[in-house]
Image 1 (cartoon, helix red, strand yellow):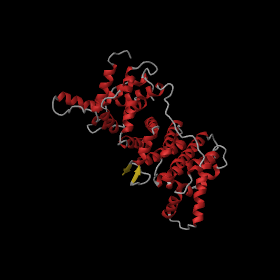
Image 2: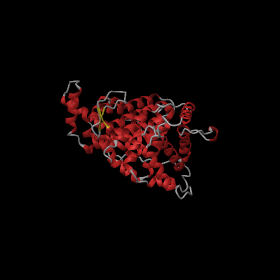
Image 3: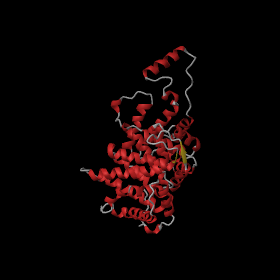
Image 4: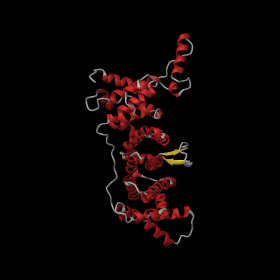
Length: 401
């Protein structure tokens, strides 16, 4: 930590990471070296087509060394950490490399440090018009992360939470349209906004975590991200509306039959109600599919109208449901045709008096790092080093994460 060349080392490590230089070919040359290489591949259970050998080992080692240096001595002066926080070189190339290697956990950690501590990089990233290049791979990581690797998912969700603190980001993702998101397998969606996809993935993660994994930090970060976005929800896809209200319905049923401690479920229900209320307050005219879904599922909210923990926030939602229900009854529409009813809802929304809803404080959550971050990051970083550095480490000498 007293090294006078710490800044130069960090810059070189980042340069090696950005360059992603491939190792020189091993074909030809010394027969002895070729045999040694083959023997090493056998000993490390690797092959010529292995993903680890197709990527840059120099870039990988540079990323791991950088993470080790930056995550130790966090309560003292750490020149490596400080340089990472002030780095401004080749941001375009750095962004491109991060987007291409996001499936690697070490990349996610580097991105976290840059977003959390480097205001220059954060400003640059949020100003880009192709933010989907970063967000889509991150959502895919969250969607496909196995249950036994929640750390990767956890870091991805923290980064999303940091991004959703910015209102321009929240507005941009709802105007960015995506086609052919083939990795989302619950339903074939030919076209969806980036914001809608983010809602789908985070809603799915909340449901899965609350009902199975029960990791408080995972669903808290998901709900916080949803809350941050809610005032900018715009033109939500009908399926997104169904999944959002469907999540509330599943948690409501779980809450109704639960005999054990239900504080986590109640907290999630409360935030979801606040998310729906925030969207209706700020963007009702641009989310008539959500209004239609509320009308279709209005009985789900009935038990909460008299519940002391929810009745204040449900009051607004009930007011919207009652207004549009009364309009439908008055119009005497008998058809069950979705498009006809939805068309009427869109027309009725034009006369909706926006000042009728009770005003609540704006939903804003901000990520705050734990008081002793090294307790999480140091074991995690060293676990990645032992798994991906292709170096031998005595497992008895460190704590696995």
